Structure formats: C-alpha cells, structure tokens
Image (cartoon, rainbow, N blue to C red; front, top):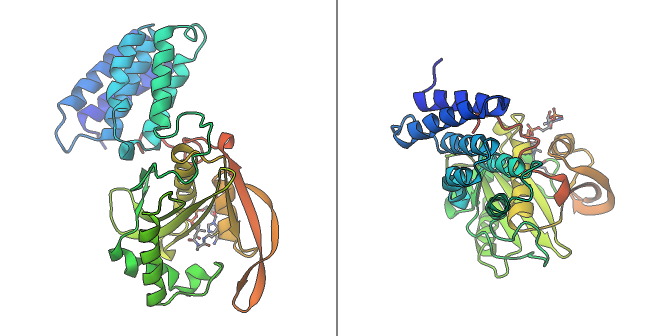
Length: 329
Ligand SMILES: CC(C)(COP(=O)(O)OP(=O)(O)OC[C@H]1O[C@@H](n2cnc3c(N)ncnc32)[C@H](O)[C@@H]1OP(=O)(O)O)[C@@H](O)C(=O)NCCC(=O)NCCS
C-alpha cells in the first residue's frame, strides 16, 4: 500500500521530528510536507494531516530555537474553525505547547505568547482556567464536535426514524430508565431536543451521534449542566454499532464538550446495576465508580438502584483513551 505523496512526506517528517536527533533535517522535511499539502489535489489532501505537517514544522523550529518561525508554521492550525479541531489536531497543538514549556524556553517572551495562543485555541470559549462557572453558557450552539471516528451534532426533525430504531428497541433500552418508546414519544424527544438547544442559558445538549463525515444518526447523547460546575451525561448507540469502541469515543466527546467548551469541573453518569456494557464503557473512558444511589429510578413497575461514575476536569485529557495515531489524524 502506498500513500499519496504529501502524506508520505508528512510521515517521514513526523518520524524525524519525533526522534528529535536532527532538527535541521526535521525542519526541511516538514517544510517539504507543508509545501506538498499546499499544492495537493483534492484526493491527496486531508486537513488533519496538513495540520500534523504544520505542527511538525513548528516542533522542528522550536527545537532549533526559532520561536517566531514556529509561530508562523503553526498559525494555520490555530486559525482552524472550532468544528475542525478534532482530537488529533488539538493533541498536535498540545505537543507544540509542551515543547514551548521545556527547560530553557519557559522565560522566553515569544514562547509564552505562543503558549497563550495555543491555550486559547484549546479552550476557545471559556479560557484555559475558567474562574467563574460558565455552566449554561450558550457558547457552543450549534454543537459540532469531531473525534477520530465520530461526530456530535444538533438533533434535527429528520432524525426521528433513526432514533426510534434505538429508543424503540427492547435490546437497546433494556438497561435504561424507560421502556421502549413509541414513535410519538420519540417525536416528542426530538422536539424537546431541538427546543432545548434554543434555551438561554442552555443547560441541555441532546445530540445526534454520527460517523465522522456522515449525517445519519447512529446514536443519541445527552449532557445536562447542573449547579456547582457539574454535568450529567447519558448515551445510547444503535445495537448494530456496539462493540467497536464507539461508546468509549462518545463519552470522550461528551467530556470534550463539558470540559473544553462549557468549562464544567465534574461530569458524572449513572447506570443500571446490570448494565455491564455501560460499566465497562464508563471505566474505559476514564471515569471512576463513585457509588450507588438506592431506588434511583422507577422503571418496569419497580424501583431500581443506579451505580454512578464521575470524572474531574484534571483527570481528563483530550488525547488519552482513544489512542489517536498519525493514521487516524
Ligand atoms: C453502553 C454502550 C454505549 C457501549 O457502547 P460500545 O460502543 O459497545 O462500547 P465500546 O465498544 O466502546 O466498549 C467499551 C467497553 O465495554 C465493553 N463492552 C461493550 N459491550 C459489552 C457487553 N455487552 N458486555 C460486557 N462488556 C461490554 C467492551 O469490551 C469495552 O471494554 P474493554 O475496553 O475493557 O474491553 C452500548 O452498549 C449501548 O448503546 N447500550 C444501550 C444504551 C446504554 O446502556 N447506554 C448507557 C446508559 S448509562
């Protein structure tokens, strides 16, 4: 298998820059990759790879002590619109941030300025360390969040059938806090989801989960903000999509929404004691089991306990869990 030329040049540069043994060679290879992406045909171009080449160029220049040249190299990445800042891209920017923080560069004013810019890029709406609770801010409407394989978007009227395929399904709802929904009930959920996006302040994010680059709803995710800079999450995928790591990625995207965009401090979730898939998914996504709420929900004619999980803002980072690789960028 051969890659298009820009990608080959990018991978060569990536290897040299990360080995770190020859920054001058890394710089010239990264320059070649950046130039190749600038003139790439539509088939050869991939914005994630182009951003990777640009951050490699920045890293090589930092290694050579050329901070202004690094700022110039990474500028197109920092100018990307929010919806294109997926995990691969924010992780690449984070590597530049870390390199700027290394010994010997900490006191350099140009390095500090570029670090500030990267922090503003990673936390576009609320600043790196929000001091006032931004909960309920309408900072991200409409939502567009992208992971390696999934995206979250706002719910639309046309999503009713796809949501019914999940919420009307006995298997998919077996452990949820409600019985399978009727088409009318699903329509009402769609209507409420759309209406809640217009609330000011917005406290509910009921979102469609789609495959990256596709429009079809394959799952439904909800994040609701609460007092004390907290948020609760819930999610369900179509059974045909289970077992491929997409549940883990969904939790990760909800954490990105909560921590990066809305500035919450704590995100939590509750599952049925029998919901083993949810237990494993929440742990896999980096959450910690907190305990049990007794008789939390009344469902199918009986009270049911819930097991709860949480993750705190400092426990989460955009590039863990999913193991983003150069290929996925
Ligand atoms: C919960 C749900 C989203 C998991 O999605 P998924 O894409 O299958 O999960 P992933 O593939 O990311 O798997 C995450 C972990 O769960 C494990 N897992 C998934 N399904 C499982 C099952 N049925 N039984 C036991 N473990 C399971 C995986 O092996 C993986 O664990 P590991 O990484 O330790 O091996 C999905 O089962 C679902 O939509 N269920 C119905 C709705 C629901 O229960 N939502 C949760 C409400 S709290």
